[in-house]
Length: 130
Image (tube, rainbow, N blue to C red; front, side):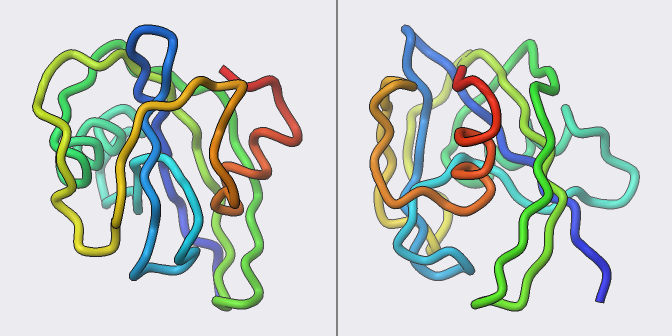
C-alpha cells in the first residue's frame, strides 16, 4: 500500500486558527484542520481552497506551504504524507458541510483542544505552531 497525500490548512483570523472535531472518518474524536486528499492535477493551494470550502464553508487567500509530516495511523491502517498550508480567512459563514465533523471552532494556536488528529499532533510536536 502506498501513502496517500493529504493537505491540511491553518485558516487564520484574528490570531486564531479554525479547527474541527472529526467523527466519521479515520481519526474519529480528534481535532484537526480542514483538509483532505489532493486530487489529480491540483496544487496544494487549490486543494486547501477546495477543502476549506467543502468542509467548513470558508473562502481563503494567500495560501502557502508551512510544513510536511509523514503520518502513520496503524489503527486505521493508513499512511499519509500531509502538506500543511496556512491561509487567511477571506469570507464565508462557518458551518460544517461534512457529516464526519461534529464541531468547528476558532482556537488560539497556543491553546489547542485535545486530542489532536495524528498529522496535526505530529506538526505541532515537530515544528513551531503558527
